[in-house]
Image (cartoon, rainbow over all chains, first blue to last red; front, side, top):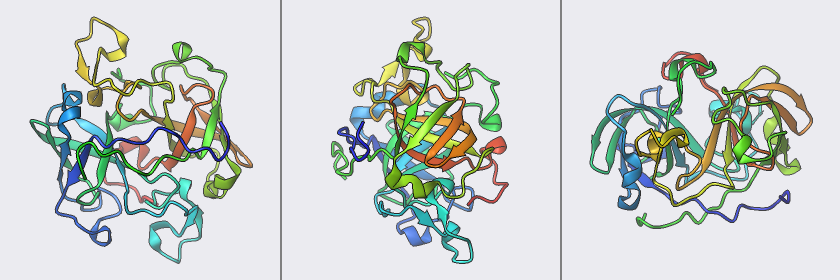
Length: 148
Length: 148
């Protein structure tokens, strides 16, 4: 693949976040830092993909930070100028070449094609592009467990 | 956002996997299932984003499964017909609407714009679209630790 090739394939949102958080400025930096629960409104065409999910499941939700800046390669972590400039791949900055958000959440409820999940810092209207089960959540780097 | 809207923004690969695995059929299903180490060849334009990464770091590498099938919503987990059909969002199947791969890895070495990481089951030539630090890797759902 050529260095500057952009992938022809585009992301197709499978759903959207419905949250009380409406502005990036009011969102916590991580779900674990006081974020609320939110709904993932899964689009009807994709709802079949939810089969097998239930309350209590630990998931990784992948979003597209639609308000992010894609030409940033270094940031001051946590937007604190006292932190030295650091490569975005060593940080969780939403500003990065491909602004994918990765959110570990717990399923609170399943209601048809809607999933109540949390805690999650993504703001209202954020497109959701994938949902995956968390593998061996309490030992993310071990080889225990039996992934599906 | 309209239900069937595709995101205008396309993914721009930040690098590519260089691995001894050359066929999907020979790749383990998860990195922890006997996958080898591999290089991530980060494209020069994105190399600045690596600043701050070092051997021993635990990362989440996000790839684009370029050989995946995007119109699949249910699968037999682990391609075993004895497993009941399950929604792709409850599985780690590479076949899914947005075939993003999520790979927890450890950095073995940093060599300029190349990262040696592993274990990783992505095959040679797989585009890499993002790299993130693993937060609280050993307690992925706890609120301990100080994310960057």
